[in-house]
Every structure is written in C-alpha cells, then in structure tokens.
Length: 291
Ligand SMILES: [Fe+2]
Image (tube, rainbow, N blue to C red; front, side, top):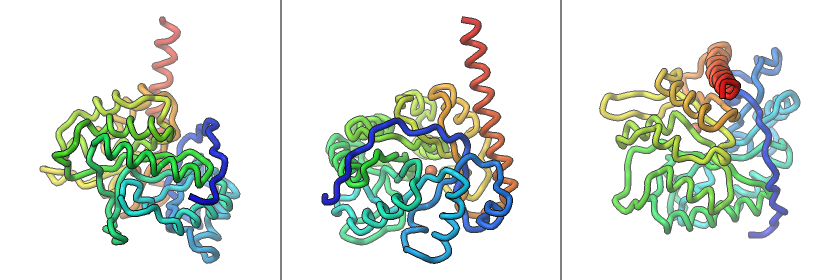
C-alpha cells in the first residue's frame, strides 16, 4: 500500500465516559457543552469535505476529544481494501486528530457489493491470518494502531475451529492492534449462540482493551437483535461491571443509533456507567488495602 506512514505504537489515552455524536444533539452540545468526556463520531458521516456535518464535527472537536468509528472497512472481506475510503479516512484523521480510529471485525460485502450488515467471520486460522494481514496494512497506511470491535451475530459457521474470543485474541495479537469491546454485543451473541458471556470476558487480555461500547437491544424471545434503539438493560450493566473488574478503567461510551432520546437521557445512562465503574474501582481499592 502506498503512502505508508511510520506506525505510532505509543499507548493511547484513557478518555473517561463518552457518547456517540448524533445530529439531533449537535446544537445542544455546542451551546451547553454537556459533561461528556469525549465523543465518538461515525466516520462515514464526515468523509465528504465541506458541508454541515464536518462543520459541526470541527466545532465539537474544538471542545472535546473525538474518536472515529467506522463501519465500511470490511476488514474481513476477500475484496481488496478500499483505497479511496482509506485515503478519505486518513484525510479526516489529519483534520480531526482523533484519539483513535476503530472499525469492526467483520465483512460487509463481496465482489464490490455492499450488504449493509456487519457479518461475522468463520473462526479459523486462515481467517486469523487473512484479517490480521489486512489490519496491519491499514495500520501502516494510517500510521496508527486500529481498534477492532467484536460484532453481534446471528449465524455461526460449521468451519469454525475456535471460540469467538479466541479468534478475536488471535487476530489482535497477530496484528498488534487494540480492541473495542462491545459488552452489549457479547451479551447478544452469548444469548443467540448459547455461550456464557462471562467466559468471553475472562478470555480477553486486559492490556488490549482500549474502549468499551454499551448499548440497548431488542429481545424477541428466541433471539436478540442488536438494535441500539433502547436503554441498556440490567444484565448488560452487570456484564459491564464484570468488564471493569477484569480490565480496570477503560474509556467507555454509549452507542445509541435509533430512537435517539434527548441528550439528558443519555447523560443519565452515562452517569450510571460512571457509578458502576467507580464502585468497582472503590471495591478494588478496598480489597487492595485489606490485602
Ligand atoms: Fe458497538
């Protein structure tokens, strides 16, 4: 890949508690500067130079740290990496100076056709090799480490040779990238595929987890759909507490993509995340003192 930059491997900062940047909240954020530590912007909304979205992102960036979260990398596909998309992403990153850039451990299309879904990969050695090579190419091109997010899924492959978390670990180790761990996605996939979400968390190396996503979903009884249009449910909060116990303080963010409520509602959910993380921290300190 051309235009390779020197890969910056230095540790990324802890940002605290953030929200997804959504159009509905632009004005309120700029007028009132709410107590959000950082915002996650959806890369694809800001790739076109000029126009309102980029204007607002620049304004938000002037007051807050921002990270970029993409859905189009299709890192697992066998199609060639989209050079135009990568060039646009690099230009945006130069402009916004995000604390980091993330995308998903998935494929979204084949033969140039976009399926508009984040599809899981078979958990095989061949896929580990394929995906990690591509992550390394992207990292080299961007000159920075990527965060790769676990997706929620509704199908599995008979070819899979390992668990999802073993696959994620293998990819991340081989590519030397970082993880964006979506706790809700783990809950959804655990329900859909009947594994224990706590086994997943316990199988993840703490040093690789740079960011956590929290979100709501729809439970249809036999299966769960990862809709991001509801408040976070208690079992997902419990799983978040477990993640805090296992991984220590991790930059945490609430992902709401549909049925977007007033900002004040999301700030209340974010406070709940803060309280849970603080409680875990206090317990850990007390246990440390007692030891
Ligand atoms: Fe997510």
